[in-house]
Image (spheres, rainbow, N blue to C red):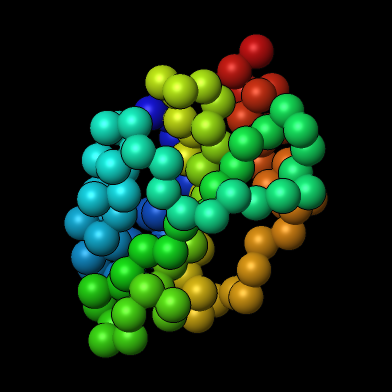
Length: 112
């Protein structure tokens, strides 16, 4: 399990507003670590990228998953997952394919 700078930065920013975000996200991380693919596949990213979006409940608000967070991750291989970004649904509607590609490209260039 790897984390992009974008993911860590967004998690930190959101944690200032939502105290429980880390415990809300932890079950998703554990599912992924067990090899379970959760969420919905995102198309239009490019054939070399297998990217998923997961709805995560925000326990700081009483509204369920649809009003919670969106966690975007890339399945690099069956044993390697890269958490790309996370955002609150109340902050933005959706994330575009180009933005996801940019995050992946930035991470790839950091790794080199």
